Length: 264
Image 1: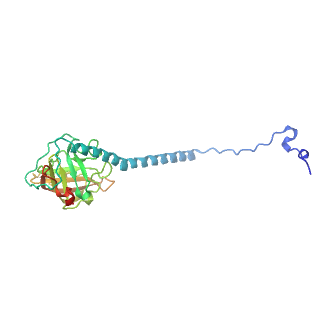
Image 2: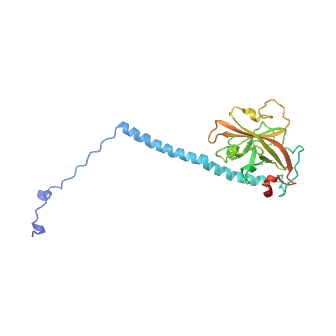
Image 3: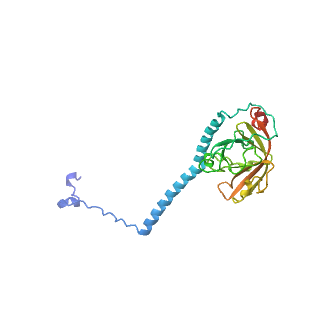
């Protein structure tokens, strides 16, 4: 049997030759068009990620922020010195002229709104004005400045988001004729009853006239109007809910039956 020393030297070990090196295949240079396609593809992926993050922020995070802010505002409203805390009993229904809250500057509170149809915990603050930055995007229900105050003869017209920023009017389609809309001021509950709903074009501003849809006519009744975008995720149209004043309750006397456990 041959020993290790008797084996022939490998070819590249003879005469001190270097071992052969494997030739590497030459990389082909990418053409301009393929490079451009790659860059555009990467940009589209990045844009898609950014768009997805924006959608998450717009549809989810703005709601989180607005709900948190509204919880703080409600606590401040309830702790005001001039805000009466109603006893947990049904108060006397009154049909004489209700107390009218004082006019306030844009962004300041007028009261809160309860909509029993939308849940026992539905309570959203109402601020004067309909500006995006200081009212609607903070999760408030906004009061159209040129419309009447709560309880005044005429049209107490409001607006709120239907998606994002707390979306106080997100489920407005669930509100039906006969439902109660309850506006709380510092010293009274004003109870309105839904009388009608409709869908209009954004240009139909007559819905917030003192007499809805009858501009120029002097009002004789106390009314309320809710306006918001329609359909969801679009501003192509407006969803309108109308209501008429039914009665008011002095907060020192109690609450509307709809806000009490036994009245639900």
